[in-house]
Length: 587
Ligand code: ARG
Image 1: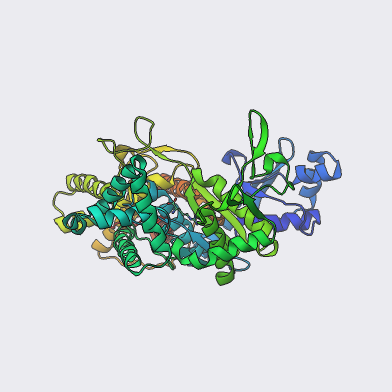
Image 2: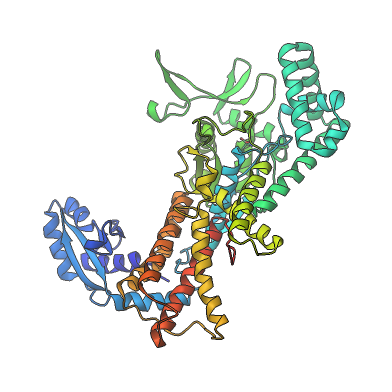
């Protein structure tokens, strides 16, 4: 289905005789008293033509043919065009929407290839609360991209290589507690890592030993490789348990180690292309002086003025690093999947890393880089009540598995209080859906580039913009159909659509917006826009339900209202599903 803004835009384009240069953007009206959609096209055109905007608006109005769609088009303010839709036209479109499995989302002109690099935890460390944001944001963007119709590759770029393995290997060989390892492998690996790294800081001899283990591993020592693989296997099974609980899937898990054999040639190629050069024994990329200083990611300003801020691609000890690996990874992804976009989801502290990495790649492979949109989708931190990074009461980082357990436990207590008579198994399942959904929604709702304060009370509340509120809106609609079935009545979709009451028209318009919202969510990488849309949808539904009796109405009106209910439920379920959130049938 085409969206309303795109239909209006075409009409506008015909009226202004503009073959498509000027962006004639049509947006939802900021205030519904003035109409449903608005455009600043007249103002843009007036600027180009150095004419009076209201005059241009008047000219457009004379040529504009939208009588079939709009009941009125008015000029407002400095030259805005305000469109008000005809309820009959809305009704026709809502009827079409009920039959559209894509829920009004237009098919893309060309399906894009999109690689989403997300979650990407480091091996041999337990996943903690900080990993949730990348996992959930990335999962949601991938789901949305697939729904729209793009080809998506979900790639978990796990950190399975690097200096930490020297210490881990040394610890494994000297202080490993086998019993502890069996009980909780990640906890034990974390313990040996912390222990050895603390001793490395105090004692150079230990540091030397850890380095030696790393050198052996990198040289392909069979014993160390075996231990390293075991650490990865143990970590992966813990990651998989978490992904299973979160309902997150990956197409590929190509960790950093996968790119090992490419690193040397990347560094050599960068040197040959004179992008990287030797400096203090390391190989670095410096500014090429092409950009204004403010935009140059290889320069930094301090009190003495601008100075170099190079990116190291080979350390003075001869080891490649995170940067080298990411350049090699990017090259591999382009070769392998020819994507139109690569989305990297990490926290905001990696902004410089990605800007430098993208810049190195553009300087190295200008043509390949021009064909792909490189997006660093970054996010802020999760804070505790004290405004500091969210920690357990004893001040430790919160392990993700514990956090999910607590979400389910708290939700189970709530569900049991509300439905004491439901069998325990059913209460557990409902609690799982609500608890996990609440954590995810609380993470997706805030503007991702800000920090947010973690609050169990808020995220599990049935009031306000929360997952339980939206899940409950769904459950309430479903219960209408249960009551219908209990009364022995059957209902089948396809009974027609009649939008008469203003609350019915308002709901119809809201439902039609989904197809406008979703592509924008992907374009801006902002699942919070979808979350807010769903909240508005639930509110618009409640207003309709208050004003328009459904089961107590009759005939065509009843059939039409049931149809609106069914579509609203389907949209809430699908929309939440695109945020990775399930819905229960009861709660
Ligand atoms: N493992 C990294 C971390 O935990 C995130 C990797 C993100 N992806 C990438 N291609 N650099 O910070």
